[in-house]
Image (cartoon, rainbow, N blue to C red; front, side, top):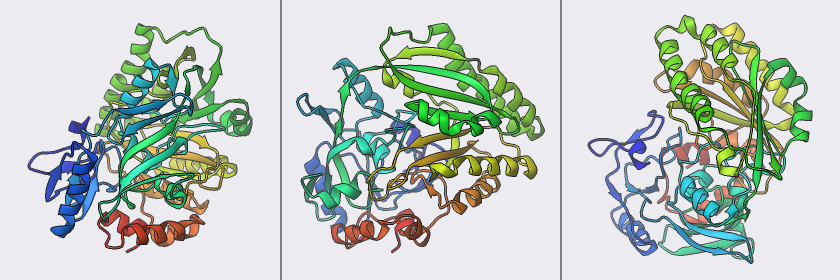
Length: 439
């Protein structure tokens, strides 16, 4: 996947194509020792350091004009502990490889996001999550991690070892050090039954609390300019396995969600007036379906249409009100939105800068196809989300700064104090971190 996040003439670009950087040099360490050495050398040369995964963040969180660390040689499973039910993986391991390797071992993560191209360290450091009543965030499944700090030392942390670092580093934004390995809690592989069905916007919003309470994993997509949504409920199942048939799967997941969807995006971009009609057709193209499979085949799906995204976590109790406002805003605005809005939930967790830190949360994500001017739509959405003390996803477009975060994260100062201790010279600083964490 590194090809999705690279460029010509030494320019690095992210997957969404909205961030570019020109690092002074790139390093691809083959071991933790080589990584520590690269951090030492950068310090000697007065350069800042950033590790980059697959570039799936839409913010400049991984951009640097200093030393860019590429982790693709630091991949693979270090070990599985069946007594503790944990797996330890190298930081550069793509989630896809982890999921497949675990499945072969009869194991699985409890929950995951809806794409699996990212590296484990990139996904967890930015707070990637799925949806769930009892679980959502990938970082909340971390039981231990190891990082190279600014002085080149290797620091291990868990609930028992360096617990104050563990509290923050699970979603560390790349600000505390470079993660080299992660230990995840795993469980015996299980089956999920997915039930996807269209439902009106008004009904989903009216019954949201009930849909959330009755399902282990509930999410839905609302198609702007329509009163339609597509809902998805994933619940554990005794089986039997009933995967989506190959032809049906190709039609729904490849043709409709990627092929036809891409064409619709091109048409909508060329002739914005067609967007509401296309949205109505798109929202009706998806029919109800039920299938049962192992977790990663149910939770994740391919995303081949490139887009740019903003996502905010709001208190779960406020989500329906925020959605109604978003719908009103879109209806009144004259904006032409060709991409569905995604809604998911997460339980409160204890990670310092997790978007669900200390509060039950719901996520509202707005997207536009790559290359479309997104500022007007995202600004309008952001005004709504911030009115509810929303917390933006660290890897998705937002305009917030340290002053705002100090107000919406009760433990913000705890994180910045830890950063002062671990990286006093700001070896891991970049423009994005200066904005969101302060100088």
